[in-house]
Image (cartoon, rainbow over all chains, first blue to last red; front, side, top):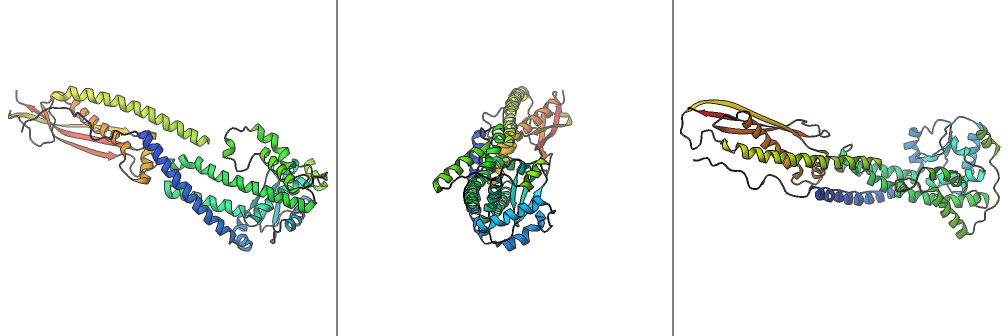
Length: 276
Length: 148
């Protein structure tokens, strides 16, 4: 046998394809999968939350949020609890809810699974009237009657499980799709928030007989949200923009023919909190 | 969102620098393969087409460690979900094989021929999926010197 030197004319060991095209194609395919599964499993979550009675919910979740622990007795705490109890009648919530006042600069209030509402003291500083406070509490009550706290949790779990199953949790590919899933979660959350706003308006009107103070809280945080910039960030936000929420509320007040009357000032117990 | 921007920066850095490095490396491979065409290299155990008596033989070794770039690794990861040929790793291994053989030849420029060429591949970050994947390709063979 003779040896003949020569170079290969064509490299058959490598594929001469476009890797960028392949990359986007595969990404698109995964996005389609994620969307379809997330949508389908989200529907399952919606069905499931309707079938979890409040008692079972409390049994499962209250240990996590320390709701069994009696909150520290204070005049503000008692007044908040009384307000929630009264609003519950208007929001037609049949089971007891525990409200907890937390000393914090943060301007926030939220509903947790198990029947708990946490109110940060920073929120009270931003309010000028009891009506405004009642609207914020009514909004959290609406989350309970809509079972949003369970929906959010359920979807969060579904999404995490789904991502872990498809991409292997914590890998770089999980990171690649995190923003997309974030948008999905945010859009769902914004929808639920708008719905809760609507129901809170009805509760407020039922409680006071007029809709005064409904937009008070959003009016006071509007300058804060405007400063943080707009651009495309709102696609990722869990709540709609303050401006939009005010607009929607005003529109609904007009549609339902609610009146807006002079609001009473913030009760002394809460304004004392402000002074502190 | 910031996460995605950081990721996009990493991906494009990986893509462009990876592409540049690959192009440069192939250029060098083509040139050197042409240059060393004068030394016959075969995988056969015997010298081919030459009956001259052999003076001596010598073991030759050449190796290369090459790493995949961020973009290709991501692409391979996506492939791992759907299956199919992992084309993004093909050039990586092709380059490593050819470079290893070239280094082996260059280690003995005076050989009359090289026989019994063998290649071995091993992955460096074995079992650690999240690490950058690198492979080592080892080429070895026997250099033959004929009697003058």
